[in-house]
Image 1 (spheres, helix red, strand yellow):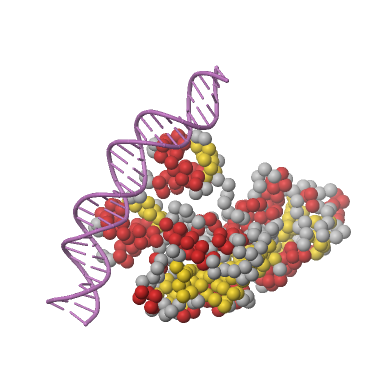
Image 2 (tube, chains in turn red, brown, orange, blue):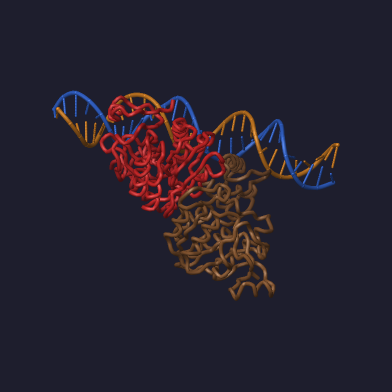
Length: 252
Length: 252
DNA sequence: ATTATTATTATCAAATTTGATCAAAAGTAA
DNA sequence: TTACTTTTGATCAAATTTGATAATAATAAT
């Protein structure tokens, strides 16, 4: 029984039960507890569940806008670092696209002092973050709302994005690999990402290191499309080589 | 029972009750009071609740969009009544326009159980209110955000609204008089109101009694445009006469 | 104000969980 | 096959979590 298989089993248990213990899973799958812990850690990084002491629990449907900012979460601090770094790429007077990922959202608090600024986004939390900042003009894409992502998706939204032009686009990605380029969880998200990429001079991809080398469900663009990658860990020599000379910003 | 599990339980209690005591929780969960205190401290740091001496109380809603809900305010309770009444005009399966006024926003909490429902709005608080309700599809107008109104305005938004059709439109108004009809604070708002009115079969105007007989800066439509007025006080005979036989819904 | 009562924080000890390291097992490619 | 990489499991020290106790702080009562 390999990781993928165990992952499925674990998620299946979690589908029925609210929480579970490491030993319990280990017994059920007849796998050592150490391995289960490793699995749970990986799955927690993918935000498929929440790690607790002694086990794991269902990932709560993150309802409020503030769900993104989770101080206790390790992945969240990593995202904050990336966000802080990405924010340094923005200059007063810029027009920027911001997509609806949590990593991109992490930029917001660092952008508030960069004024004037024009922000075009499909994310409600992003719009909310700048709502009361006088020096930042927010333009939100219209269309059908996706409740779980708290963002607007679909043709209408893509049309909206395309009717604007920005200096810089900042997008998150669910997967990034040399072989398959950028990949996303869903077609909808990929569409928005491409629209932003197509209407901006520069494209910055924000990607936390756990996603590098991984592929998600839908691949939507080659690595060549991006101006630079913003991430949180120094890349290995071979990873860098794969990026074909793309600039890489790394948080130290 | 680990921290995460207790956290959930505690939040669940706080969801129903306004405040609670440490010992009470300790007994309920069969956990030592010391541990509960530690939990409460952590949760207070996450701003999930407010620590009090001897217990904890509900945290103020952290959404940036809940600014309208102001219980202490007298005008707010009046608006709630109007909202409740207006909500009775909505039937499952309807497509409705909701504008960005606080009175219209007051409808939202009463609409949540009417499903399925399609809501088209230019208001971010309205969109946020329905975000997590699976049976309610939200469509938000795109365009420039107006920070003070927490809504989208302008040509782009008007175009957006016009591209949809609804059974019923619910709009607020800043002024309503027999002589000058409906009036608004700004041209932007008036534009949205008219767009909604023009694309809906029925137009319901929500207006608290203090605004009846008053005019605001910009008049944008005659009274004849509305299907019915929803308000909070019985109107005088002459007021009724002025309304030229329009239906009036009044909260008793 | 002063005392009594109750809540909070600090410190410690016991129990458990975890992460690191390394060895064994299972795949993989030549 | 062999050599090499990856995954898994075992062991144990380090870190967390929890509850008990004692000292301190805050509130209520007199």
